[in-house]
Length: 318
Figure 1 (tube, rainbow, N blue to C red):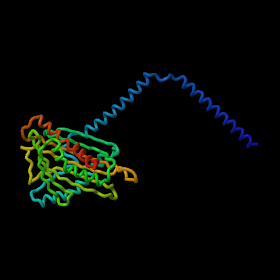
Figure 2: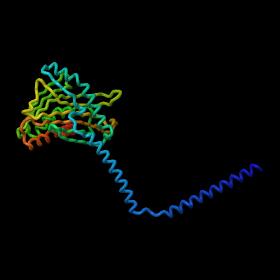
Figure 3: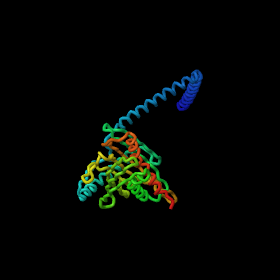
Figure 4: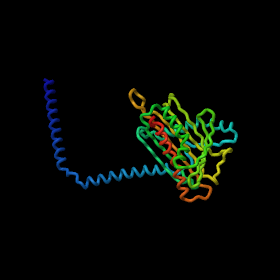
């Protein structure tokens, strides 16, 4: 009998619960009907508030970017290089800093591109003038090279393009260029001194070292090809002549890696990432503003000519 009364109580309580839930649903429906519809003015007000919030957030980002974009005299790819007169000493200096140059370049390239999708092109280009009147350009670029034969093929083409970019610029612009090369001994280390005179008689000089190497995959990093360039600060054998020529410094790195593994029947895409810091020193001799502006424009054509030469090598028809 007790069990029967227990079941009856349960049934009654379930029924009461259902009735209460039905009453709540009814009241909610009535409340929604009593609420006035959102006016267009209200919608516009909410949109304006949201736009204001987004704009404030964008201004905060711009403020941070402004701080990060303060003019700098050097770059993470730069290191002070001093070459003596002795060829033996010069060679030792170049070989001693090789590993450090590759390591610093790869770390900078990876950190600089870590939040950017590697399958999308990217270019950032910032130019400014220092308190001394020197003109600087900081550049970072990501380029996709689809349908290539191999990663090593691209690395070899990059090395050729970088090694000949100044000559290519001279041919394109009609400059007269003299180049002195010194091989560091193992074929992967080079020192080049390049003197170039444009069609109005303004000369520039670039004294740089270049390192090139292909790295197989290891426990940490994927296979990669690298070309690293940095300018010589002091050269006892070839001192800068700032009273005759405009000095140009270049600190640059190019890293090529495979974006997708080569599968049967598929194309290989190689991603090229390059960073560069170009500095054109204010002339130590009289020069017109027009000639100075022209020299600045010529100094930053380096990257465009490099990529044009590279694509010509990779995609030329036999």
